[in-house]
Image (cartoon, rainbow, N blue to C red; front, side):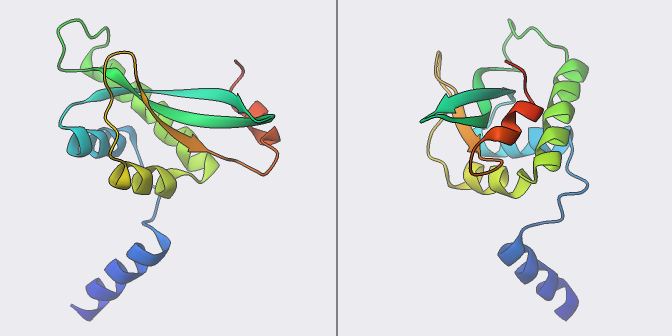
Length: 130
């Protein structure tokens, strides 16, 4: 009991162990937050001379008849995004931002979670080539 409480307190302070973060966990975070299985993309944006990466929660969602991906394709895409987030050390940042955000995806407007890899944004070029 004490060990379990200690672990929860520690996770609250430093974040959860992100080494096992997967597409299914990302899907659950999104579904729990918004009530739908929204699509996710990674983009690179230039802002004030810096290259920033962002995870966009898009307005299309799996439960729509017109959604272009099967469930397996959707989970594979989220697995890819989750792996990138782990490499960047951004899983806790994404979790916290999703938890606190009041924004919701709507037609033509994604929810962007910006991920700053370093002060200059130079490392962003290592990851996304757009």
